[in-house]
Length: 629
Image (cartoon, rainbow, N blue to C red; front, side, top):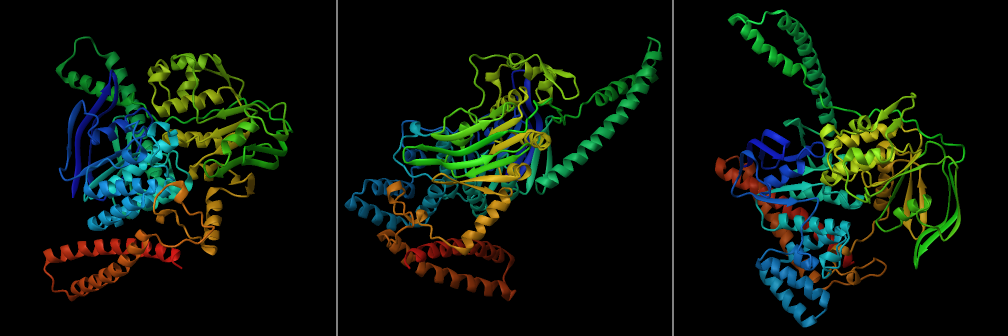
């Protein structure tokens, strides 16, 4: 089924064009990742497809039966309403019944709860309710009666994601799911679950993401937006990089030929008399075309910067018996470690276990309760934090950089001016004289990174550095860090970024326990999965009767079925054999070879539906049967 067609789309803000004359098509089942630099209009294009922006020129057609669901970087909520009210916004009997059931579950009124259960039975809402519970539980959303204006940035992002996933699961036959950086503020376990969920839901997908493992797991096509053009690449991220390199090489060779021709034509033009003959006029017109081609610039800048880094002495940082707690919450419990020159350490652990506190203590931003932290005299920290740029007043980009220094010293002995340094970080002349407040989120992050490196640190502390950075900039940053001669400490949920850069990990396991793991993130995750297989744990959070923190079973004691779970389990034991029997019948008919083509199509579609339903119901039956053991 054809979903979307776009022809000649153009969009500008003021004199700055975001993109012009781009065309594309989206078919049902496509899974597409959109790659482009920050500030080139990725988010604007996504909002245009969702009907929240209009093009300056061009045509956009969306099939009338297709529902477009948009997940944005900056979600919009009814701020004074609860999480529950913001998630369940559709006025539909099933949605209303689930919303009422979840609300009553938290209130604990038994009589009203029984009435809700009867209504859920009548509407057949339990299957969808189970899916809702899975989404909310996996995204760690429990306090449904909390008002949205009291949530942190990460909580808001997870609530918006939950709403999006519930929307696409509710009675949508044809959905185009558009996602703008869905993995920001998710821990790795959540990201891995989201990969599986999107694959299982089998939606048509268009997304922007900096997480290359997530991209490869969810998409099979990459669109690259560059210089007002769209380039289409089938396959994974590695294939995209290979094809892009080949394209740039080909374009460079073509431009070089044009430059040689341009030099010859320019020489001819200069020798011609002022009066032009008709014969020479055609050659003159052709000259301007060649000139345009010859002066074309291949925009593939790379951050190749030989820093004159402050020398790192023999003593770097030494921590001895360091303790830190907040009340009953233990962050560090007698932590000992001596940092060595050139170390690259990743920090991993669940949200809230103290990763940010640890790096703040290391830099002297926060104080430890006890213990010794000895920092070498030559250590100069570069702190790239989630907080981002802090400006007392708005100023132009070039003014901000010059406020730190006019020139940047190089290892070769030379210097770069502030403007030249900005060019290396992909800020062209126009952007350099733009006010910082007018930059996109990713451009601000890039400027923040620039401001850190401009001070020539020798110990980099990077707290979630990949959030809001585009893939081209990430590749440049990784290349730079791989050659960086100082120490690097990274807190990140980006598995690809960690795998490429770190030598070993500090694993924060909670209760002040920090394990030094000798390997990268993928190696650590493989070891953890192996442990989970050998020691399976019953997960009960997705089957709780309501999603308050008080009702979540921690697995330390065995619990019995709730009334709702008992009914659901009995219903599954009836439905699974019925679906299996229908599947066998259709298989026999399909194998007979006597079915008309139209009927064959219908049966094939039904077979796909049956397989999906059986997978979901059998998985749910297994979850419930483990509780009932």
